[in-house]
Amino acid sequence: MGKNNVNNQIFNSFCLHPNICFNDQDVDEYPILVLRAHPITQLPWLFNSFFLMIFILFLNFFLPRYLGFYRFVFFNFFALALIFSYLYFNFINWFFNVGIITNKRILDVDFYGLMYRETTIAMLSKVEDITVKVGGFFYSFFDYGNLFIQTAGKEANIEFINIPKPQKVAKIINQLLKNG
Amino acid sequence: MDSLLIIDNRQIIFLFFKVFSLAFSFVYLIFSVVSFQQIKIMSKTIRVEKSEILIVVSIIQLMISIFLFFMAIFFVT
Image (cartoon, rainbow over all chains, first blue to last red; front, side):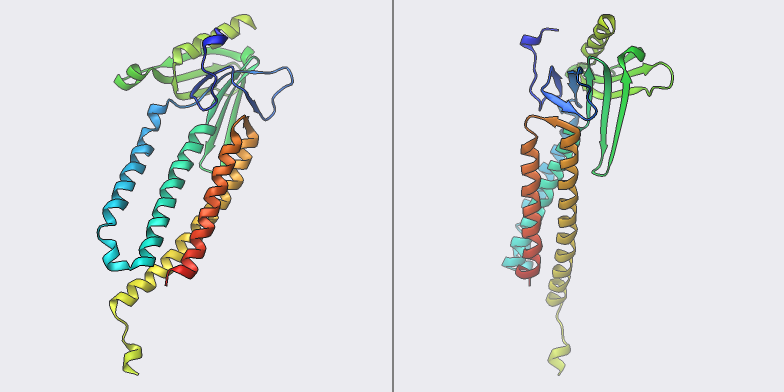
């Protein structure tokens, strides 16, 4: 799988042979691939923050007249803190919503907001079918899409949404299935 | 006596500003505490080499929220 020329930085969305550990990891289990949503899908919240900053800047032309110095300073501090939290919250959501493919199984870890966590696990031996869905201009241009992994029996199916290089991911899983 | 009863519009706006700044900064403080706890749990669920950065950022967020809360109490009149 070309270990020498791959991107294994943990802040990437397609991370081959990452230095990562997770809960319930077996002793002889090691992660091969960690996936996150493609960065292009994260642009909306970055744009929102940018426009909020512009809006706050715009308000700064009018508010000092009505609020006075101390209230104005507080308002700006508070608005900036909210924008910072909004950015950080979305980054955390992106960072911890991962798909992990190990030598034994496939995990899909999802955090919804700050309160709820869902982990779906499928053994590699139970994988029956892999479907890649790439549709639309942006999907093709930036090479990202959805990957659906269907499993046998009662094991849950796994969905990786908006992941980068879905064909390559399917190829890696197929290779693992052949090897294992 | 009459002068005590007369409250102009500016004072009402400032009173609302004080109440809202206290309420929102308190909610923000609660949010920061919850997100700090949750990020600690997330970092334990998925352990990466640079997860300390995320913990440090959430501590900074918590400190900012405490600062804002005290600012709302003492600074905003």
